[in-house]
Image (cartoon, rainbow, N blue to C red; front, side, top):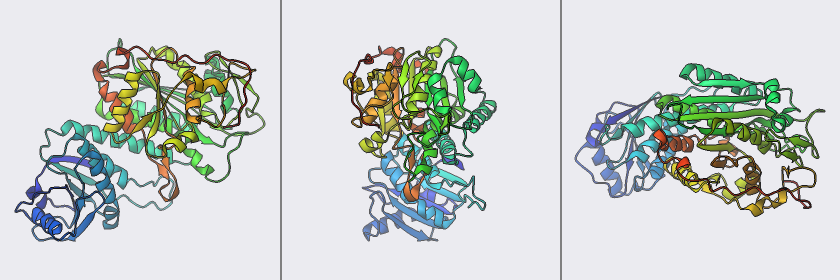
Length: 506
């Protein structure tokens, strides 16, 4: 899809030849004498249109307006959130009209967040998955013009929004692929293709290389699958060698059966989305390729399937992680933390200024936050604040949850340094506390995206979150600005192993 930013007012919009002209109408709209103003003014006066998000009115071949169809959509106060809601509400109209060219006229006072919302909202609403369909439905919308009062003033916001849309769509497409397509091998190939096309350094390791690294925890999860594991490293070098990188770590379980602790069959097909963290890292790198910011970023993706056969790991097994810490497996369906812990140890070699892992980690986070906000955990207040602000700006919000030492009590075991699960209570926090043990040497944040990486039901599919949040955060760090390294890590020490505890399987 081709996006264009253009300086347009209501009179100019009337002259734009297109299939659909989408006019976003704010509260307090002031009508002029041009044809679009007259149409909006009449609709408001007759109360056929309300300027509330979700309210719409359509007109066909209106006098004095070059567009075939005009859609008037309320957008409340014109904020990014309201603009996004208005664009998404108009998505059904766009699909039914088979429009090829769309012009979106933003309110005159629209700022950067409204531009972002218009671009990303349109891209999201018009996305159609076709990769594995025998008769794919074609995407009709080819050209989108975003009209603003001053295109020059909004150019940077527009470019960022376009890059975010590209990255989000890349992540969605990977996430939506079936698990027999999106294997660990395929993820490695996609990373290599991206690296070749955009100049990233990419390294893809297989089982033998991972064994030499001592990633015993990661390797154990992969043992039950015929698909070989992959450990993917991407490096974007936009700044000098002396600048410490930000490391993104994405959970890449391309299918999660639960292993020996097998999941219920209902909705198990959705476990193809368990590589949402990996997809978001790859999508973020795809967006970085569009913008080329001046910073260094490393992406780490441990990827495998969690399957069960005679060689699969099992409850009661003791694993030795890359860090040397031993782990008692009490539930093989808590596998994400077992592959991430080795990747988090591996991240130390880059001497990072911050490490952020992204994972569809716990159902408990879905219970806590639903599909609205991703769960955020952090050992550094500055890093947490920057990520939260980035999420709000990108309309990809998160919510910070605690990391108190007491939450690690349930992970104590008589047989290893740590168990991989505790009881049902505070499951998202306990999972974060498990990961926290492996992140003592750098500022760290964990995003639990189990509720936000995909949707179920009739809208089933990957969302591409949190690519928008990650990209916004990285851009805020360009040139070393507002870096987490400027504030000392406020880490909570991991609980020491101790004897005795009772636990229900998570």
